[in-house]
Amino acid sequence: MTSPDETRDLALRFGTPLYLVDIGRVVRGLDRLRDGLVAHYPKSEITYSVKTNYLAGILRGVLAAGYRLEVVSGHELALAEWVGAGPAQILFNGPSKAPEDLEHCYRHGIDFHVDSVEELEQAAALGSCERPVRLGVRVAATLANGTVSRFGVHGDELAAVRRVIAGGTVRLAGLHLHHSSRRDARSYCERLDELLRVAAELDASLDYFDLGGGIASVPSAEIAAKLSDAVEQPDDLTATLGQHARRVLGAEGPQLILEPGIGVLADAMEYVTRVTAVKARPEGTLAVCDGSLFDVNPLRSSMGPPCSVLAERPAASVRLFGATCMEIDQLGTLPALPEAGDLVLVSNVGAYAVSLAPQFCVPMAPVYAVDTGELLRSRQSLGDFAGAGQ
Figure (cartoon, one colour):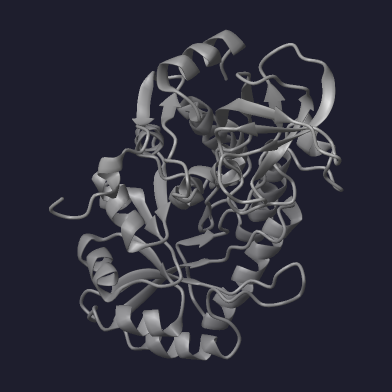
């Protein structure tokens, strides 16, 4: 995203550790998925997954490009509205909605999906036959290991869904199904087939089918080498899904919705940290930096993000550890032997890293948008820890 010299200048300006993000790259990723899907099934929409990266600067960029924000909690709903999203620019998912969230969506005409029969009943109580509540229902997915997801409604619960809809205070507008246990194009076609089956069981004529997110990002060469299977290119995925949708829905069927997060965010952000020490151990050389595993891989995936030294150094395999007081705090492995003071670039950290990074030992790192020149978040200060009235 930036040249080594530009990265050094930014590290000097803002200090380390530091996140760098390209908002335009996020939007281009959304555009690519939308254009690829629309080319085969015109009634398609791409939304942006707020939970995957909630930075206000990114959200505003996505909104300005014409995309809706998909939120999963009352907190994210308030955030979406705070950055300027109107009711028509929000899609509310999530497994547990407060009654006031449901009422807010009904009152303002915000699209939302209920996750349980209980939520459906709460929503139905808000509406009337004259003004029914327009909503979608999440359907429980069968995961790759054969188990059924805890999210959504399943099996005998569909009878209760039919009963509530029959009351006349709810208008079922769509069905939603999401999981990330499989990311191949065929799995998205199977999601659509399952939602069609459920729609028939509910005897429902729907406005849309929402197939959720979970779309894989295009991996770097280093990550691709570690994968057992090749990752489909976005154009291949959208072509396969779009063509299948046209076959089963017809040219003018219900709208098709996807909610990408990782697929458009992973490669849009990098993390810059500085080496503070290099140590010899019987198990091999290790380096210590001022960053943290929890800033770049908070879910502790076994496949950590790629790390590189921004200097010409001898080739080596060096474990890179962070600044927290935890033995597990290993960011990754460097392909070169660094020296104290060297900068390290950690890539593929745009998805979930900012959203899930804990406030542990080191303050939250600032975030700088390299394409807009905007500081999206300052480094956390002591004032951020002060309680009310302090």
